[in-house]
Length: 455
Image (cartoon, rainbow, N blue to C red):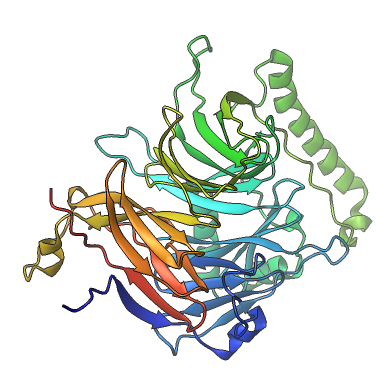
């Protein structure tokens, strides 16, 4: 009886340019903590401390792009996070730095946007969204920058509007504007995107965090049009901590007056000074960006279990489940709404997790008809990569059995395509897939979507 292959090869990224990232050495992909990976539908972005390499893995002849951000040598600034931002026809690369800068580049390597968020290292750029359907009343699409003890949230619509304007400028050939942006690398030359900022370090600096969705306000809270978000964080001092995040920075009358009067006063003074000191317009001195104040973050609960430490955090598509790995080799499945651990796996040191969706009936995948599988044809699963065991296990959520056990090379890494903004519910359903990158061969494969589970 032949052994079933649970993966399908899709392409290869092997090329000479990978040598700049250390390719060719044993464990160059999985063992280097400074090497970052971000996957799009047909492209892969690899980044180390000073360079981003974009490779198309489905077409070996596709052009490769090298992006070298202009980083501060004085502060030893380096690339600390990378992610794709995909809006319909617009695809760009978002880069986070150790100095708290958010950089957005086109696939030609042009700098589109630069903005400082907070003076701290960006640990991760998390892109996610929930579509409006029969179960949810709101559509929330966001980009979050996770820093030690800090969460910053950008609304997806604000980023899309900025990219749409950039696209129109490019198509209209506004070269003077584009050259002005390229020559002035200071963040003051770029339009500043609005964002919310929260301090979630009540239980210590977090190693990772995520906004899991919108939640109702407290019972005794004054009702307003402001949204409240639920967030979870993991770290050394608390394995799991949860917060209610408010959009309001200050509810007092004094705070409201200051938030309205101070910016107007500052703008008036700045305009008046420009009229007087016209000769200083050619000055190359960079203006300092005033740090944004924190909005309110109210702690909900926390789990402390010394010496256990939270290490990695993965969210399900809806945000209702989170898989958390810790320093004791355990994987915890957390219900983010009830804030209860509903499942626990042991013996998975240095593990990484990704949620995926699998067909519950193999006949759907092998059918010769043109039937398009819907969301109800898939079951939510969790893929756990145990590098010390050399396997990937796929478990059905929440309490289901193990569906697959896949052997993989030691230098492999699990990846997942980034969230795509703006896709409608009526479009053909695209299940959540998990890809496997083999660092030794450069081969990219996808875990097959069928299982032997019969409902």
